[in-house]
Amino acid sequence: MSQDLMVTYYLHSGFSCALGKTLLIFDYWLGENGELSESRRISDQLLSKYEEIYVFISHAHPDHYDPVVNEWHDRYPVTYIVSHDMPIGARGKRMAPGDSLSFGEHVSVQAFDSTDLGVSFLVTLDGIHIFHAGDLNFWHWREESTIQEIDEAEQAFHSACEPLAGQAIDLAFFPVDPRQGRLFDAGANYFILTVKPRLLIPMHFWGRSEVAEEFARRARCRSTEVIAMIRPQERLKLSFAEDGFMTITPMPYRAFGEETEVALPDEGDVFAETDLPVNLEL
Image (cartoon, rainbow, N blue to C red):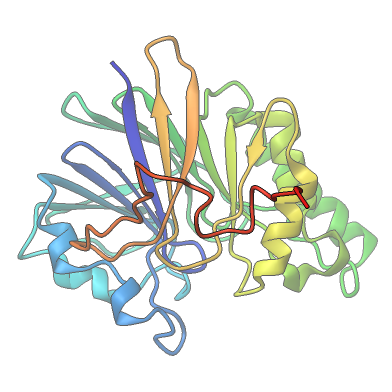
């Protein structure tokens, strides 16, 4: 029996992963000026579908943590899992690098290091391994940093990735930040080469969708598929067979509760409304 994981992109580094009655939400953000439109946001209708909701906040930078997530606390079965340096209420858990948590039989979480504030998360949901990097990246600024600063940043990044190299990762969300200039993808490329996730989705591209798309085109390799999700509420369905085979299916955008599908005619001449076949008889 296969399992279907539904992956939804919202904005910047914000994603959700849904499986059965469990919903994972990562680094949700509405944008600096609320750019994520109302119809593309996480709605009450969506949240009410799930019996378990886990909200992950990798660190306190405003582009990774929107206070709107706090409003879900009293209405839905939400557990907040946040970086060790953030405040948390009674329905939350703090995690530092090296910490592990389990939530029943369905969900377990490991926290790994970051090269900026906070942590990165590796979540296992019913045997599916999902990694969200937060701000883990090779943060180099070639036009401004000294050679020593770049070398130190590279060493710190490699050290942070080392514990991840032996981990099974089915899906990874990882930064490709165009503000870094020409070598913006150095961290993501290294992560693919050393950690080898089965699927990597670029994030943190500051609205520069062409950057994510070009990275996906160039970075995919035999061990790792790379897919750019660039439109709010864009979705992928990941189907996992019993033998471990993973099928990736892009899903059309549809607002929650909107069940309209495009139907193709199932009878008659499928060429009736086209210029084919061509009659060559004179």
